Length: 142
Length: 444
View 1 (cartoon, rainbow over the protein chains, first blue to last red):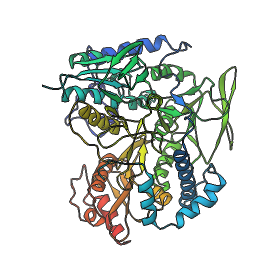
View 2: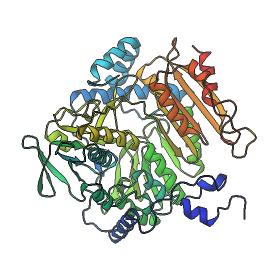
View 3: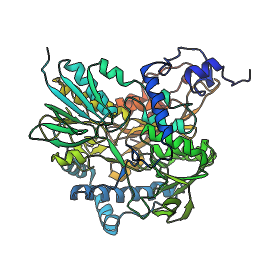
View 4: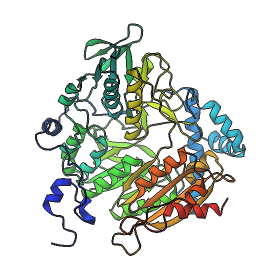
Protein backbone atom coordinates (compact mmCIF):
# COMPACT_ATOMS: atom_id res chain seq x y z
CA UNK A 1 0.00 0.00 0.00
CA UNK A 2 1.34 3.44 -0.89
CA UNK A 3 2.21 5.71 2.03
CA UNK A 4 -1.02 7.70 2.00
CA UNK A 5 -3.33 5.24 0.34
CA UNK A 6 -6.50 4.95 2.36
CA UNK A 7 -8.01 1.55 3.08
CA UNK A 8 -11.39 1.17 1.42
CA UNK A 9 -13.13 0.38 4.73
CA UNK A 10 -11.91 3.68 6.21
CA UNK A 11 -12.81 5.65 3.10
CA UNK A 12 -16.31 4.19 3.18
CA UNK A 13 -16.65 4.69 6.90
CA UNK A 14 -15.76 8.35 6.95
CA UNK A 15 -16.73 9.24 3.43
CA UNK A 16 -13.84 11.67 3.33
CA UNK A 17 -10.39 10.50 2.42
CA UNK A 18 -8.63 13.41 4.13
CA UNK A 19 -9.63 12.17 7.56
CA UNK A 20 -7.41 9.15 7.27
CA UNK A 21 -4.34 10.98 5.99
CA UNK A 22 -2.63 11.06 9.35
CA UNK A 23 -3.37 7.49 10.31
CA UNK A 24 -6.37 5.22 10.59
CA UNK A 25 -7.56 3.92 13.92
CA UNK A 26 -8.35 5.98 16.98
CA UNK A 27 -11.96 6.39 17.94
CA UNK A 28 -13.97 6.59 14.76
CA UNK A 29 -16.99 8.86 14.97
CA UNK A 30 -20.43 7.55 14.16
CA UNK A 31 -20.82 7.40 10.40
CA UNK A 32 -23.41 9.52 8.62
CA UNK A 33 -26.94 8.18 8.52
CA UNK A 34 -26.67 4.50 7.57
CA UNK A 35 -28.50 3.01 4.56
CA UNK A 36 -32.16 2.45 5.32
CA UNK A 37 -32.33 5.10 8.06
CA UNK A 38 -34.98 7.84 7.81
CA UNK A 39 -32.30 10.47 7.15
CA UNK A 40 -30.69 8.43 4.38
CA UNK A 41 -34.08 7.73 2.80
CA UNK A 42 -34.89 11.43 2.89
CA UNK A 43 -31.57 12.20 1.22
CA UNK A 44 -32.15 9.60 -1.49
CA UNK A 45 -35.66 10.90 -2.14
CA UNK A 46 -34.36 14.45 -2.33
CA UNK A 47 -31.69 13.43 -4.82
CA UNK A 48 -34.14 11.56 -7.04
CA UNK A 49 -36.46 14.56 -7.05
CA UNK A 50 -33.66 17.05 -7.71
CA UNK A 51 -32.21 15.05 -10.59
CA UNK A 52 -35.63 14.85 -12.22
CA UNK A 53 -35.77 18.64 -12.22
CA UNK A 54 -32.36 19.46 -13.64
CA UNK A 55 -32.82 21.99 -16.43
CA UNK A 56 -36.50 22.49 -15.64
CA UNK A 57 -37.88 26.02 -15.62
CA UNK A 58 -40.71 25.05 -13.25
CA UNK A 59 -40.60 27.34 -10.20
CA UNK A 60 -39.40 25.64 -7.03
CA UNK A 61 -38.35 26.89 -3.61
CA UNK A 62 -34.89 28.33 -3.22
CA UNK A 63 -34.23 28.88 -6.92
CA UNK A 64 -33.29 32.50 -6.45
CA UNK A 65 -32.57 33.19 -2.77
CA UNK A 66 -31.40 36.73 -3.42
CA UNK A 67 -33.01 40.07 -2.88
CA UNK A 68 -32.25 43.71 -3.29
CA UNK A 69 -32.76 44.99 0.25
CA UNK A 70 -35.83 47.17 0.85
CA UNK A 71 -34.88 50.84 0.94
CA UNK A 72 -33.39 51.03 4.41
CA UNK A 73 -34.25 53.61 7.00
CA UNK A 74 -31.81 56.39 7.76
CA UNK A 75 -29.95 54.69 10.66
CA UNK A 76 -29.17 51.64 8.53
CA UNK A 77 -28.12 53.72 5.53
CA UNK A 78 -25.83 55.81 7.72
CA UNK A 79 -24.32 52.76 9.38
CA UNK A 80 -23.69 51.00 6.05
CA UNK A 81 -22.12 54.08 4.45
CA UNK A 82 -20.02 54.90 7.51
CA UNK A 83 -18.78 51.32 7.89
CA UNK A 84 -17.84 51.14 4.26
CA UNK A 85 -15.82 54.35 4.40
CA UNK A 86 -14.01 53.27 7.56
CA UNK A 87 -13.21 49.83 6.19
CA UNK A 88 -11.95 51.23 2.91
CA UNK A 89 -9.66 53.57 4.80
CA UNK A 90 -8.32 50.73 6.92
CA UNK A 91 -7.80 48.55 3.83
CA UNK A 92 -5.76 51.31 2.20
CA UNK A 93 -3.62 51.68 5.29
CA UNK A 94 -3.03 48.05 6.27
CA UNK A 95 -3.12 46.60 2.79
CA UNK A 96 -0.94 49.37 1.39
CA UNK A 97 1.87 48.43 3.78
CA UNK A 98 1.80 44.86 2.49
CA UNK A 99 1.46 45.71 -1.18
CA UNK A 100 -2.23 44.82 -1.60
CA UNK A 101 -4.36 46.63 -4.16
CA UNK A 102 -6.54 49.46 -2.86
CA UNK A 103 -10.23 48.61 -2.48
CA UNK A 104 -12.78 49.64 -5.07
CA UNK A 105 -13.89 53.10 -3.89
CA UNK A 106 -17.55 52.52 -3.11
CA UNK A 107 -17.99 55.01 -0.28
CA UNK A 108 -19.26 58.41 -1.33
CA UNK A 109 -17.18 61.58 -1.14
CA UNK A 110 -18.75 62.81 2.09
CA UNK A 111 -18.21 59.53 3.91
CA UNK A 112 -14.68 59.07 2.59
CA UNK A 113 -13.40 62.64 2.90
CA UNK A 114 -15.39 64.09 5.78
CA UNK A 115 -16.87 61.34 7.94
CA UNK A 116 -13.92 58.92 8.07
CA UNK A 117 -11.28 61.53 9.10
CA UNK A 118 -13.68 63.16 11.55
CA UNK A 119 -14.56 59.81 13.14
CA UNK A 120 -10.90 59.00 13.52
CA UNK A 121 -10.23 62.26 15.34
CA UNK A 122 -12.75 61.47 18.09
CA UNK A 123 -11.18 59.77 21.12
CA UNK A 124 -12.20 56.14 21.59
CA UNK A 125 -13.96 56.59 24.98
CA UNK A 126 -16.28 59.13 23.35
CA UNK A 127 -16.79 56.91 20.28
CA UNK A 128 -17.51 53.99 22.55
CA UNK A 129 -20.29 55.89 24.30
CA UNK A 130 -21.68 57.06 20.96
CA UNK A 131 -21.70 53.48 19.68
CA UNK A 132 -23.40 52.18 22.83
CA UNK A 133 -26.08 54.89 22.66
CA UNK A 134 -26.80 54.46 18.96
CA UNK A 135 -26.46 50.68 18.71
CA UNK A 136 -30.13 50.09 19.46
CA UNK A 137 -29.19 47.21 21.75
CA UNK A 138 -31.46 47.14 24.79
CA UNK A 139 -32.34 44.61 27.47
CA UNK A 140 -29.11 42.64 27.11
CA UNK A 141 -26.78 41.46 29.83
CA UNK A 142 -23.45 43.02 28.84
CA UNK B 1 -47.61 19.40 33.37
CA UNK B 2 -46.88 22.23 30.95
CA UNK B 3 -49.24 24.85 29.59
CA UNK B 4 -51.32 23.80 26.56
CA UNK B 5 -50.06 26.44 24.19
CA UNK B 6 -49.78 26.62 20.42
CA UNK B 7 -46.24 27.37 19.33
CA UNK B 8 -45.67 28.07 15.63
CA UNK B 9 -42.19 28.20 14.15
CA UNK B 10 -41.68 29.84 10.76
CA UNK B 11 -38.61 28.38 9.08
CA UNK B 12 -36.96 24.97 9.07
CA UNK B 13 -33.28 25.90 9.14
CA UNK B 14 -30.86 25.54 12.04
CA UNK B 15 -32.68 28.14 14.16
CA UNK B 16 -36.20 26.92 13.38
CA UNK B 17 -35.55 23.25 13.95
CA UNK B 18 -33.66 23.78 17.19
CA UNK B 19 -36.34 26.23 18.39
CA UNK B 20 -39.13 23.74 17.76
CA UNK B 21 -37.25 20.84 19.35
CA UNK B 22 -36.40 22.91 22.42
CA UNK B 23 -39.93 24.26 22.77
CA UNK B 24 -41.34 20.73 22.73
CA UNK B 25 -38.72 19.52 25.17
CA UNK B 26 -39.44 22.43 27.55
CA UNK B 27 -43.19 22.03 27.33
CA UNK B 28 -44.21 18.55 26.15
CA UNK B 29 -47.88 19.56 26.32
CA UNK B 30 -47.47 22.35 23.79
CA UNK B 31 -48.59 21.92 20.19
CA UNK B 32 -45.50 22.76 18.15
CA UNK B 33 -45.80 23.36 14.42
CA UNK B 34 -42.90 24.11 12.05
CA UNK B 35 -43.74 25.57 8.65
CA UNK B 36 -41.06 25.69 5.98
CA UNK B 37 -41.44 26.58 2.33
CA UNK B 38 -38.69 24.12 1.44
CA UNK B 39 -38.78 20.38 0.78
CA UNK B 40 -36.21 19.37 3.38
CA UNK B 41 -35.18 20.05 6.94
CA UNK B 42 -32.43 18.70 9.17
CA UNK B 43 -29.57 18.69 6.70
CA UNK B 44 -26.29 20.56 6.69
CA UNK B 45 -26.32 23.35 4.10
CA UNK B 46 -22.75 24.16 5.12
CA UNK B 47 -21.68 20.85 3.59
CA UNK B 48 -22.99 21.69 0.11
CA UNK B 49 -19.77 23.33 -1.21
CA UNK B 50 -17.79 20.24 -0.23
CA UNK B 51 -20.07 17.92 -2.19
CA UNK B 52 -19.91 20.31 -5.16
CA UNK B 53 -16.11 20.19 -4.85
CA UNK B 54 -16.24 16.37 -4.66
CA UNK B 55 -14.53 16.30 -1.27
CA UNK B 56 -17.65 14.61 0.11
CA UNK B 57 -18.93 11.89 -2.19
CA UNK B 58 -22.69 12.46 -2.00
CA UNK B 59 -25.43 14.75 -0.79
CA UNK B 60 -27.33 12.03 1.05
CA UNK B 61 -24.92 12.01 3.93
CA UNK B 62 -25.65 15.67 4.66
CA UNK B 63 -29.07 14.64 5.93
CA UNK B 64 -29.23 14.30 9.69
CA UNK B 65 -32.83 13.22 10.24
CA UNK B 66 -35.93 12.27 8.32
CA UNK B 67 -39.37 13.86 8.73
CA UNK B 68 -40.59 10.78 10.64
CA UNK B 69 -38.24 11.66 13.49
CA UNK B 70 -40.11 14.93 14.07
CA UNK B 71 -43.43 13.13 14.14
CA UNK B 72 -42.00 10.76 16.76
CA UNK B 73 -40.84 13.77 18.79
CA UNK B 74 -44.36 15.19 18.66
CA UNK B 75 -43.56 18.10 16.37
CA UNK B 76 -45.93 18.87 13.50
CA UNK B 77 -43.53 19.45 10.61
CA UNK B 78 -45.11 20.99 7.51
CA UNK B 79 -42.79 21.02 4.55
CA UNK B 80 -43.41 22.95 1.32
CA UNK B 81 -45.74 25.11 3.36
CA UNK B 82 -44.96 28.78 2.90
CA UNK B 83 -46.27 31.19 5.52
CA UNK B 84 -47.83 34.04 3.60
CA UNK B 85 -49.34 36.15 6.37
CA UNK B 86 -49.33 36.74 10.10
CA UNK B 87 -52.38 38.20 11.84
CA UNK B 88 -51.05 39.90 14.96
CA UNK B 89 -54.49 40.60 16.45
CA UNK B 90 -56.11 37.23 15.85
CA UNK B 91 -52.78 35.52 16.59
CA UNK B 92 -52.86 33.29 13.54
CA UNK B 93 -50.64 32.56 10.57
CA UNK B 94 -51.70 31.66 7.06
CA UNK B 95 -49.63 28.69 5.94
CA UNK B 96 -50.24 26.72 2.78
CA UNK B 97 -53.73 28.19 2.59
CA UNK B 98 -54.59 27.09 6.16
CA UNK B 99 -55.06 29.32 9.18
CA UNK B 100 -53.09 28.16 12.22
CA UNK B 101 -53.44 29.67 15.70
CA UNK B 102 -50.46 30.61 17.83
CA UNK B 103 -49.90 31.71 21.38
CA UNK B 104 -46.14 31.97 20.83
CA UNK B 105 -44.62 32.59 17.43
CA UNK B 106 -40.94 32.03 16.57
CA UNK B 107 -39.71 33.70 13.40
CA UNK B 108 -36.66 32.00 11.87
CA UNK B 109 -36.91 33.19 8.29
CA UNK B 110 -33.17 33.26 7.64
CA UNK B 111 -31.51 35.30 4.94
CA UNK B 112 -31.25 35.97 1.23
CA UNK B 113 -28.06 36.87 -0.58
CA UNK B 114 -27.87 40.56 -1.40
CA UNK B 115 -28.66 40.83 -5.09
CA UNK B 116 -26.31 43.35 -6.71
CA UNK B 117 -28.35 46.20 -8.09
CA UNK B 118 -26.65 46.19 -11.51
CA UNK B 119 -27.79 45.48 -15.08
CA UNK B 120 -28.26 41.83 -15.94
CA UNK B 121 -28.98 40.61 -12.41
CA UNK B 122 -31.95 38.61 -13.71
CA UNK B 123 -29.91 36.45 -16.11
CA UNK B 124 -29.85 32.67 -15.95
CA UNK B 125 -26.47 31.56 -14.76
CA UNK B 126 -26.47 33.66 -11.62
CA UNK B 127 -26.18 30.84 -9.13
CA UNK B 128 -26.84 30.58 -5.41
CA UNK B 129 -25.60 27.95 -2.97
CA UNK B 130 -28.12 27.66 -0.15
CA UNK B 131 -30.79 25.00 -0.65
CA UNK B 132 -29.75 21.35 -0.89
CA UNK B 133 -32.03 20.29 -3.75
CA UNK B 134 -30.96 23.25 -5.83
CA UNK B 135 -27.39 22.30 -4.90
CA UNK B 136 -28.02 18.80 -6.23
CA UNK B 137 -29.25 20.29 -9.51
CA UNK B 138 -26.22 22.59 -9.68
CA UNK B 139 -23.92 19.63 -9.12
CA UNK B 140 -25.20 18.01 -12.32
CA UNK B 141 -24.78 21.13 -14.43
CA UNK B 142 -21.25 21.88 -13.19
CA UNK B 143 -19.89 19.16 -15.45
CA UNK B 144 -20.60 21.44 -18.42
CA UNK B 145 -19.17 24.59 -16.85
CA UNK B 146 -15.80 25.75 -18.18
CA UNK B 147 -15.47 29.17 -16.56
CA UNK B 148 -17.01 30.55 -13.38
CA UNK B 149 -16.93 33.75 -11.41
CA UNK B 150 -17.43 33.87 -7.67
CA UNK B 151 -18.77 37.21 -6.54
CA UNK B 152 -17.21 38.31 -3.25
CA UNK B 153 -14.64 36.61 -1.08
CA UNK B 154 -16.96 35.82 1.80
CA UNK B 155 -16.63 32.50 3.65
CA UNK B 156 -19.01 30.84 1.17
CA UNK B 157 -17.16 32.51 -1.70
CA UNK B 158 -13.87 31.07 -0.49
CA UNK B 159 -15.35 27.58 -0.14
CA UNK B 160 -16.85 27.79 -3.62
CA UNK B 161 -13.55 28.97 -5.14
CA UNK B 162 -11.87 25.83 -3.87
CA UNK B 163 -14.82 23.62 -4.84
CA UNK B 164 -14.95 24.88 -8.43
CA UNK B 165 -11.18 24.69 -8.78
CA UNK B 166 -11.32 21.07 -7.59
CA UNK B 167 -13.76 20.40 -10.42
CA UNK B 168 -11.23 21.70 -12.92
CA UNK B 169 -13.24 24.84 -13.68
CA UNK B 170 -11.42 28.09 -14.49
CA UNK B 171 -12.52 30.10 -11.48
CA UNK B 172 -12.27 33.85 -10.94
CA UNK B 173 -13.02 35.84 -7.81
CA UNK B 174 -14.39 39.37 -8.14
CA UNK B 175 -14.16 41.33 -4.91
CA UNK B 176 -14.26 45.04 -4.14
CA UNK B 177 -12.01 44.60 -1.12
CA UNK B 178 -8.23 44.53 -1.07
CA UNK B 179 -7.87 40.95 0.11
CA UNK B 180 -9.79 37.77 0.78
CA UNK B 181 -12.38 37.77 3.58
CA UNK B 182 -11.72 41.49 4.05
CA UNK B 183 -14.97 41.90 6.00
CA UNK B 184 -13.34 40.04 8.90
CA UNK B 185 -9.75 38.98 8.25
CA UNK B 186 -6.48 40.89 8.34
CA UNK B 187 -4.37 41.02 5.17
CA UNK B 188 -1.39 39.14 6.63
CA UNK B 189 -3.71 36.42 7.95
CA UNK B 190 -5.63 36.10 4.67
CA UNK B 191 -2.50 36.06 2.49
CA UNK B 192 -1.62 32.34 2.95
CA UNK B 193 -5.19 31.43 2.01
CA UNK B 194 -4.98 33.56 -1.12
CA UNK B 195 -1.71 31.89 -2.05
CA UNK B 196 -3.23 28.47 -1.52
CA UNK B 197 -6.23 29.28 -3.71
CA UNK B 198 -3.95 30.70 -6.40
CA UNK B 199 -1.99 27.46 -6.14
CA UNK B 200 -5.22 25.62 -6.93
CA UNK B 201 -5.55 27.76 -10.06
CA UNK B 202 -8.04 30.38 -8.89
CA UNK B 203 -7.66 33.84 -10.40
CA UNK B 204 -8.32 36.52 -7.80
CA UNK B 205 -9.38 40.05 -8.78
CA UNK B 206 -9.30 42.39 -5.79
CA UNK B 207 -10.31 46.04 -5.78
CA UNK B 208 -12.65 45.20 -8.64
CA UNK B 209 -16.09 46.80 -8.68
CA UNK B 210 -19.03 45.00 -10.27
CA UNK B 211 -20.51 46.87 -13.25
CA UNK B 212 -23.05 44.31 -14.41
CA UNK B 213 -23.75 40.91 -15.90
CA UNK B 214 -23.57 40.53 -19.68
CA UNK B 215 -25.72 37.94 -21.34
CA UNK B 216 -27.09 36.60 -24.56
CA UNK B 217 -30.48 34.90 -24.98
CA UNK B 218 -31.19 35.49 -21.30
CA UNK B 219 -28.11 33.54 -20.23
CA UNK B 220 -24.99 34.87 -18.52
CA UNK B 221 -22.01 35.32 -20.84
CA UNK B 222 -19.66 37.51 -18.84
CA UNK B 223 -19.26 39.50 -15.66
CA UNK B 224 -18.40 43.16 -16.26
CA UNK B 225 -16.09 44.71 -13.68
CA UNK B 226 -14.14 47.93 -13.34
CA UNK B 227 -11.07 45.87 -14.27
CA UNK B 228 -12.61 44.49 -17.44
CA UNK B 229 -14.94 41.75 -18.57
CA UNK B 230 -14.58 38.14 -17.41
CA UNK B 231 -16.26 35.49 -19.53
CA UNK B 232 -18.24 33.07 -17.41
CA UNK B 233 -20.81 30.30 -17.76
CA UNK B 234 -22.02 30.82 -14.20
CA UNK B 235 -21.55 33.36 -11.43
CA UNK B 236 -21.82 32.18 -7.85
CA UNK B 237 -23.38 35.03 -5.90
CA UNK B 238 -21.77 34.81 -2.46
CA UNK B 239 -22.69 38.25 -1.22
CA UNK B 240 -23.72 39.53 2.20
CA UNK B 241 -26.54 37.71 4.04
CA UNK B 242 -29.51 40.06 3.92
CA UNK B 243 -31.97 39.21 6.71
CA UNK B 244 -35.34 37.97 5.39
CA UNK B 245 -37.79 40.16 7.28
CA UNK B 246 -40.81 40.42 4.97
CA UNK B 247 -43.18 38.78 7.47
CA UNK B 248 -41.60 40.55 10.44
CA UNK B 249 -42.07 43.93 8.76
CA UNK B 250 -45.67 43.07 7.86
CA UNK B 251 -46.58 42.97 11.57
CA UNK B 252 -44.45 45.94 12.50
CA UNK B 253 -41.63 44.23 14.38
CA UNK B 254 -38.78 46.58 15.17
CA UNK B 255 -35.74 46.24 12.90
CA UNK B 256 -32.25 47.40 13.82
CA UNK B 257 -29.31 49.08 12.16
CA UNK B 258 -28.30 45.91 10.28
CA UNK B 259 -31.81 45.36 8.95
CA UNK B 260 -32.24 42.38 11.26
CA UNK B 261 -35.08 41.91 13.75
CA UNK B 262 -34.30 43.47 17.13
CA UNK B 263 -34.44 40.92 19.95
CA UNK B 264 -33.52 40.95 23.61
CA UNK B 265 -31.40 38.37 25.39
CA UNK B 266 -34.36 36.00 25.60
CA UNK B 267 -34.84 36.32 21.83
CA UNK B 268 -38.08 38.25 22.34
CA UNK B 269 -38.98 40.70 19.61
CA UNK B 270 -40.73 44.03 20.07
CA UNK B 271 -44.11 42.23 20.12
CA UNK B 272 -45.25 40.16 23.08
CA UNK B 273 -45.36 36.44 22.39
CA UNK B 274 -43.22 36.74 19.24
CA UNK B 275 -39.65 35.46 19.26
CA UNK B 276 -37.03 35.39 16.52
CA UNK B 277 -33.70 33.65 15.97
CA UNK B 278 -31.03 32.95 13.37
CA UNK B 279 -29.91 34.96 10.38
CA UNK B 280 -32.98 37.21 10.47
CA UNK B 281 -32.07 38.78 13.84
CA UNK B 282 -29.34 41.05 15.12
CA UNK B 283 -27.52 40.57 18.43
CA UNK B 284 -24.89 42.67 20.20
CA UNK B 285 -21.16 42.08 19.83
CA UNK B 286 -19.72 41.44 23.29
CA UNK B 287 -17.05 44.12 23.49
CA UNK B 288 -18.75 47.05 21.80
CA UNK B 289 -22.48 46.24 21.91
CA UNK B 290 -22.59 46.99 18.18
CA UNK B 291 -25.43 44.99 16.65
CA UNK B 292 -24.28 42.24 14.29
CA UNK B 293 -26.23 39.92 12.01
CA UNK B 294 -25.67 37.03 9.61
CA UNK B 295 -23.45 34.90 11.84
CA UNK B 296 -22.86 31.15 11.67
CA UNK B 297 -25.05 28.06 11.77
CA UNK B 298 -23.80 27.45 15.32
CA UNK B 299 -25.09 30.87 16.39
CA UNK B 300 -28.44 30.24 14.67
CA UNK B 301 -28.80 26.89 16.42
CA UNK B 302 -28.06 28.32 19.89
CA UNK B 303 -30.36 31.29 19.34
CA UNK B 304 -33.09 28.89 18.24
CA UNK B 305 -32.65 26.84 21.41
CA UNK B 306 -32.98 29.95 23.56
CA UNK B 307 -36.06 31.15 21.67
CA UNK B 308 -37.64 27.69 21.83
CA UNK B 309 -36.97 27.26 25.54
CA UNK B 310 -38.49 30.64 26.35
CA UNK B 311 -41.47 30.16 24.03
CA UNK B 312 -42.06 26.85 25.81
CA UNK B 313 -42.25 28.61 29.17
CA UNK B 314 -38.61 28.34 30.25
CA UNK B 315 -36.16 31.10 31.10
CA UNK B 316 -32.98 31.01 29.01
CA UNK B 317 -30.71 33.87 28.05
CA UNK B 318 -28.45 34.34 25.08
CA UNK B 319 -25.22 36.19 25.68
CA UNK B 320 -23.65 38.87 23.49
CA UNK B 321 -21.41 37.29 20.88
CA UNK B 322 -17.64 37.19 20.35
CA UNK B 323 -18.05 35.31 17.07
CA UNK B 324 -15.45 32.58 16.85
CA UNK B 325 -15.07 31.77 13.18
CA UNK B 326 -12.94 29.45 11.15
CA UNK B 327 -12.79 27.72 7.82
CA UNK B 328 -10.55 26.03 5.31
CA UNK B 329 -9.50 28.14 2.36
CA UNK B 330 -7.65 26.11 -0.23
CA UNK B 331 -5.44 23.96 1.96
CA UNK B 332 -5.04 26.42 4.80
CA UNK B 333 -7.15 26.92 7.90
CA UNK B 334 -8.06 30.45 8.93
CA UNK B 335 -10.08 31.75 11.84
CA UNK B 336 -10.36 34.09 14.75
CA UNK B 337 -12.68 35.70 17.24
CA UNK B 338 -13.96 39.21 17.83
CA UNK B 339 -11.75 41.92 16.32
CA UNK B 340 -8.77 41.63 14.05
CA UNK B 341 -6.42 44.51 13.33
CA UNK B 342 -8.41 45.58 10.27
CA UNK B 343 -11.76 45.83 12.07
CA UNK B 344 -10.19 47.44 15.13
CA UNK B 345 -8.48 50.02 12.90
CA UNK B 346 -11.73 50.64 11.03
CA UNK B 347 -13.66 51.28 14.23
CA UNK B 348 -10.80 53.26 15.76
CA UNK B 349 -10.36 50.92 18.71
CA UNK B 350 -6.94 51.47 20.32
CA UNK B 351 -4.98 48.22 20.41
CA UNK B 352 -1.62 46.57 20.70
CA UNK B 353 -0.73 43.48 18.66
CA UNK B 354 1.14 40.40 19.80
CA UNK B 355 2.12 37.94 17.07
CA UNK B 356 3.85 34.60 16.85
CA UNK B 357 4.62 31.95 14.28
CA UNK B 358 4.28 28.68 16.15
CA UNK B 359 3.84 25.04 15.30
CA UNK B 360 0.97 22.61 15.71
CA UNK B 361 2.93 19.56 16.87
CA UNK B 362 6.46 18.88 18.03
CA UNK B 363 8.86 20.11 15.36
CA UNK B 364 10.10 16.59 14.70
CA UNK B 365 6.67 14.96 14.50
CA UNK B 366 5.37 14.04 11.01
CA UNK B 367 2.68 16.36 9.74
CA UNK B 368 3.76 19.36 11.84
CA UNK B 369 2.28 22.59 10.49
CA UNK B 370 2.88 26.27 11.03
CA UNK B 371 0.28 28.18 13.08
CA UNK B 372 0.41 31.97 12.93
CA UNK B 373 -1.33 33.78 15.78
CA UNK B 374 -2.13 37.45 16.12
CA UNK B 375 -3.69 38.73 19.37
CA UNK B 376 -5.10 42.20 19.94
CA UNK B 377 -5.37 43.77 23.36
CA UNK B 378 -6.34 47.00 25.00
CA UNK B 379 -3.30 49.24 25.66
CA UNK B 380 -2.59 49.60 29.36
CA UNK B 381 -4.82 46.84 30.74
CA UNK B 382 -3.81 44.18 28.23
CA UNK B 383 -7.39 42.94 28.09
CA UNK B 384 -7.92 40.86 24.96
CA UNK B 385 -10.10 42.38 22.25
CA UNK B 386 -9.66 39.75 19.58
CA UNK B 387 -7.35 37.55 17.60
CA UNK B 388 -6.82 35.80 14.30
CA UNK B 389 -5.04 32.64 13.25
CA UNK B 390 -3.89 30.95 10.10
CA UNK B 391 -2.19 27.60 9.72
CA UNK B 392 -2.27 24.04 8.60
CA UNK B 393 -4.22 22.68 11.56
CA UNK B 394 -5.49 23.51 15.05
CA UNK B 395 -7.23 26.76 14.14
CA UNK B 396 -10.80 25.89 15.14
CA UNK B 397 -9.99 24.89 18.73
CA UNK B 398 -7.87 27.99 19.26
CA UNK B 399 -10.60 30.26 17.84
CA UNK B 400 -13.14 28.69 20.21
CA UNK B 401 -10.74 29.10 23.13
CA UNK B 402 -10.10 32.70 22.16
CA UNK B 403 -13.82 33.52 22.10
CA UNK B 404 -14.25 31.99 25.54
CA UNK B 405 -11.21 33.86 26.88
CA UNK B 406 -12.63 37.11 25.47
CA UNK B 407 -15.99 36.47 27.08
CA UNK B 408 -14.32 35.94 30.43
CA UNK B 409 -12.25 39.11 30.12
CA UNK B 410 -8.85 37.41 29.83
CA UNK B 411 -5.72 39.52 29.42
CA UNK B 412 -2.47 39.03 27.54
CA UNK B 413 -0.90 38.25 30.92
CA UNK B 414 -3.41 35.40 31.42
CA UNK B 415 -2.69 33.92 28.00
CA UNK B 416 1.07 34.43 28.30
CA UNK B 417 1.12 32.33 31.46
CA UNK B 418 -1.56 29.84 30.50
CA UNK B 419 -1.09 26.11 30.90
CA UNK B 420 -1.04 24.11 27.70
CA UNK B 421 -1.01 20.54 26.46
CA UNK B 422 2.38 19.33 25.30
CA UNK B 423 2.38 16.05 23.47
CA UNK B 424 4.47 15.67 20.31
CA UNK B 425 1.73 14.35 17.97
CA UNK B 426 -0.86 16.98 18.95
CA UNK B 427 0.88 19.99 20.47
CA UNK B 428 4.23 21.69 20.77
CA UNK B 429 5.96 22.64 24.00
CA UNK B 430 5.40 26.31 23.28
CA UNK B 431 1.76 27.07 22.61
CA UNK B 432 1.61 29.64 19.76
CA UNK B 433 -1.18 31.61 21.52
CA UNK B 434 0.95 31.92 24.62
CA UNK B 435 3.99 33.05 22.64
CA UNK B 436 1.89 35.66 20.81
CA UNK B 437 0.62 36.94 24.17
CA UNK B 438 4.18 37.14 25.54
CA UNK B 439 5.16 39.18 22.50
CA UNK B 440 2.09 41.36 23.01
CA UNK B 441 3.03 42.08 26.63
CA UNK B 442 6.17 43.76 25.36
CA UNK B 443 3.97 46.21 23.42
CA UNK B 444 1.83 47.32 26.36
